[in-house]
Amino acid sequence: MATANTDRFIVRAEIRSSGESVVSYGFDLTATSIFVVTEWNAAIGTQVELRLSFPKILDPVEVIARVADIRVAGEPGEQAGIKLVFDEAAGDVGARLVSLLERAHTPTPPDAPEGRPCRVLLVDDSWLIRDMFAYGTAKFFDRPWALAVDHAEDAEHAWGKLESSSYDLVIVDYFLPTEDGASLIARLRQDRRLSSTPIVAISVGGRDAREATLSAGADLFVDKPLVFRDLFNTLRILAERRGQARPAAERKAILVFDDSPFALALTRAALESAGFTVAIAADLSSFERQRVTFDPDLILVDVQMPEAFGDDVALTLRGWHGVQVPILLVSSLDQHELARRAQRAQVSGYVCKGAGMPELVRRCRELLEASP
Amino acid sequence: MDDLYARFLPQFVALARTRLATAITAATRPEAASTSTMVRELHTLAGEAGLLGLTGVVPLARECELKAKRWQAGQLEEGADGLVSALHELAQIIEQITVPG
Image (cartoon, rainbow over all chains, first blue to last red):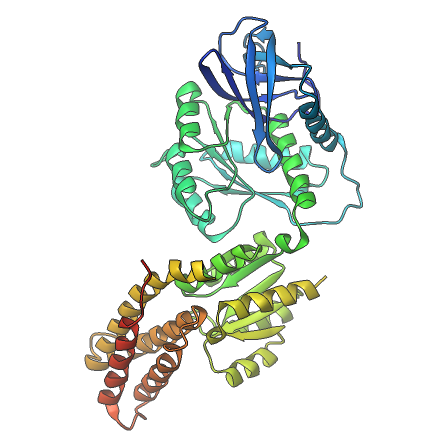
């Protein structure tokens, strides 16, 4: 029987056998076996087709396996499920899993460079669950800054955050005020920009919540009460994978501040298609919040906005807040006026909106490649 | 970028129509809309057109913005008629934009 250890993490597990199909999650993954949480009533020895995956961590692997053990629900945190042992012929699958496990077991060197944090949006109206995430980040992460958990108490607040920022993972409770989690997940999957975001659904709702969220497009459904150790180990691997797998240019984060929602949407689409991570802000309070939480590598600021002039914002960032990252003024002002304001504000440069989006993307790339 | 333009062009045209309608209202019925709103709408329109690479729209939108500023300051020699005429010319150019699909 699989026993708990300190390196458990969760993966999506899809089981097919004799026309039956079960989608759940598993942990206690080794090169030869996994424990899958399920109430599926299978006999020991039953052969199944097993597909394991987790977005950005484990590309789908398919393996033939057999039910080696059955566990009924026991102590808190001990879910009902089955232990599956992989077919001996699954050589290359075993090697891939070993590679994943080695990565999971390798502690991060204390002197590892501080990359961008893994950004997670937790959509849950329970303050206690939020506090548990905050506590878990400090407890389970050797480097707590490697995980940045943002919160939203309902679907509308979540949508606002999703529209203005980029997340590596979204965790959605099924039971939310006004709009349920499945509906939010369906909206995410239909949105062109957000559709590929990994989503973990969580709930006390059992089978109904699982079916609703998975059919809406969640990658994974995890029952409450959450076993935080499993979830945080998964997030830790996701955070480390994020830093290792993506080319440097992709990790560059750009914050765009403009009062025109159209200009924001267009700029974000262009920069994201060029491989950058982008957050947007349409007003000062949103900009200040994003600047702190998103920690951009480059800031683009429009000049003529209702609340403040962009060059004054830039000057304050440089002079008062000590912001060192490159800042570009982006405006439809004429070039001489824009150049004058850029010089006064001590920014890294300027781009006339009339020069078009390819020029803007080129300047962003140039500045980010030049910055450390 | 072509895919991007195709995706955003219809939205730009719809927004530009709204912005121009606001500007024309402010120029013809100053009691119904503020002139500073007009200036801001035209400035934003010029910027949005610039980002989309609509080189035929940007100069005229900028000209309309400058005229609006002068009119607001009481310094536009041709008066409201000159501004309204420029705004209608810009509206015509917007309507000539071919929206894909």
